[in-house]
Each structure stands twice: as structure tokens, then as C-alpha cells.
Image (tube, rainbow, N blue to C red; front, side, top):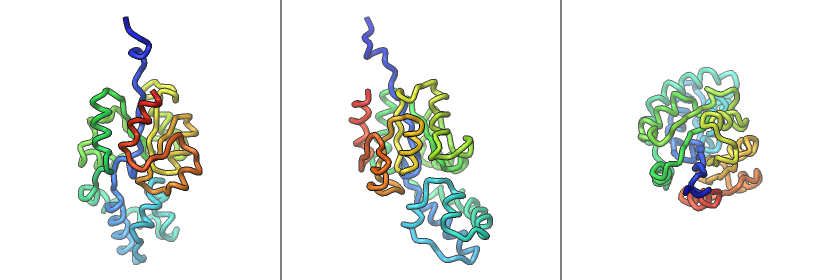
Length: 222
């Protein structure tokens, strides 16, 4: 006879991409500074770029360059970034091990990212990530980007899951906000763009400093 525990569906695990699973900051920094140089604008330091990644490429560039230069910088950035992402992008520590373990144990997984779809596909191809994920949704395929809850709600709808049947893992304040708005328990790992004190202020379910610490939290939720 099946027990109620055996009948329970495994949690849907939704991941952010940049800063949570992968480190692509150097590629973003290289592409942005290429575009700035070609436009005659001063270089931006790596830390400033990292702190502004995660809200989408247009918001990134708009936050760092004069408004009248945004369109040109964005065009140059996109052209360069297609190649920059093929070199130097790597997994955040422990990310691949966590994905392997979740995949082996049959957890359905999704990506919900503010990064444009075309660049997300390049990263996932280069790091051979696609087999882990049954669904990938990016902000350019949703009505609104994070911190709005749209892409998380789209992931729930794809898997026909309730918010209580999922957990979301991100690295930024906007992830904590979007998770709360979608009513999904949200775990923030402090390996990305936001500082620990910033994400704590948004009161996510848990805050961890390494992705391998996610595993006992998942078991606790189940």
C-alpha cells in the first residue's frame, strides 16, 4: 500500500540563473566596457557591474550610462556579448553538484531569469545545463520582469503546481520580492549581486552563503 509520503509530489525547484547558478559577471563586464569604449564613455569597474546585474540588460545599461547613449551602448553590448558568453562563464561553487543531485532524485526544475532568452540559451549550451531543466522562462517572454511575479507564476502554470508545491532560489532582493509576490518559499544565496543585509531586509524564507546548504532546506520543506 502506498503511504501519503510516497504520494507526495516532489517540490518544483525554480532557479534564478546569474549569481545563483552561474557566474557570468566577467562576460557582462567585458561586453559593457567594450560598448563604453566604442561610445567614448569611461570604463566601469567590475564591482559596479556585478552590483547592477540581474534586472535585465536595458536596466543595467540605463543605470550606468547617460540616457542619450543607452541605445548605442545596448546595441554594441549585445553584439559583443554573444561571443563574450562563450568564454569565462562558469558555475557558481556547488551549483553543478546540487543540480546533479536534484536531477538524479527526480526533482522537476525550471529557470526563471531576467536575462534575455538568446543569452540564456548560450550560457546553458556552453555549460551543458539544458538537460537539467524541463522549463526555462526569461523576462523577454513574460509580461513583466522580476521583481514582478510573472515569470514565477508562468513556471507554476507550466508544471500545474500551486505556490506551496514549489521553492524558488535566487541571489538578489528582486528575487526575494518576486518570490514573496508569487507566494513561493524563497531561498536567497549570497553569491550574486545583492548584499546579505539587503536580502535579509526583504525577509525571504532562508538566506544561505553557499548553494550546497540548500539541500537540507529542501528536505525541511518536504
